[in-house]
Length: 69
Image (cartoon, rainbow, N blue to C red):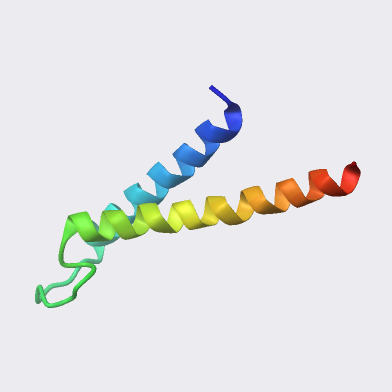
């Protein structure tokens, strides 16, 4: 597999793990918080945030490659 895809997948998995860790360690004591009261939602938000970070990173690299040619 391409190293770039493995790196992107790793950052998404890391984001998901951080989202779950936020649920587990910070969470919501009352259960009324829409994001942190459910582990699936907080994990999904973390994975989405990692995905967004990888989108921005890839675009900068492609722009730099186009300037070289």
